[in-house]
Amino acid sequence: MSPRRLATAGLLALAAAAAAGCHKDAADCTPPPVNLVPSEAGCPSFTNDVFPNVFVPVCDNCHAPGQQEAVMPLTSYPQIYGPASGANMGAEAREIFNQVFLSCLMPPSNAPVPLDAQQRQTLLDWFACSAPDDSPSDGGSRD
Image: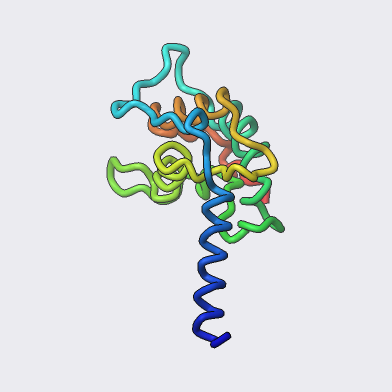
């Protein structure tokens, strides 16, 4: 087999594996409403609700030091939210929102810990409240 065909076959195999690993059932990926509105219960606390109940049990399996996606750590508010420009959501937060709620690629279906309905709602409510930071002055990092 020529090196070119071998490379093409390898790329196709990687694409198929990636697609299989990220496939979500329709029930797991209901798009959020176009206009996000904060919950009547109020905004979730990043420190008490979002970080320990969503990011630590679900995201840390891959996005923490020593894990496979350590190059994109999600272990502190600045890493999760990222730099904002004006009134716009930070780049990392926007990417998380897109990956979780719009493209439904995260967490992948083969993740060690899936995102359950309550965790998904907590994260969505936090985004609806403009992703406020109430972390300690050290940024709440666990690095």
